[in-house]
Image (cartoon, rainbow, N blue to C red; front, side, top):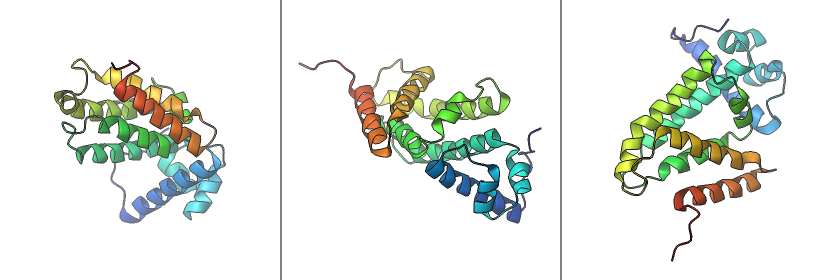
Length: 188
């Protein structure tokens, strides 16, 4: 059973929910995701029942974090003229990935056909679909660049997060971005 996320939350309930998300984001980044939910509840200053009422289980919490990150991703993209800076789409995704390196493997391992994950994946697709015409109109990328291509490139960037520490992950991500942006062809 999933919590009802369609109802607007009262102000105090929304603050507690956000406190749980903030605590989870911080703790997952510092300690990984295999920590007891009670640890997150304690860090957020709420009871464990509040965590479960809002997110039901760990996957619900991870999906809510991804949902928030996609909101930020969309906000960043809307602030950029992608006709002038088409590769900012990939820079924004790389930033999203690096910021959430601890969470990415869990997101990737989720059941892609499950309704909750499908909803969040669809959100990513809608964001990319909404900005892709401007990216293509820039003339700096292939005219046949598709949402599926962007998903493939996002997966390639995600693979760069396998580095053993933040500095290595950052170097690998920047190298992957360079290869994506310039290709692997030798220039004369």
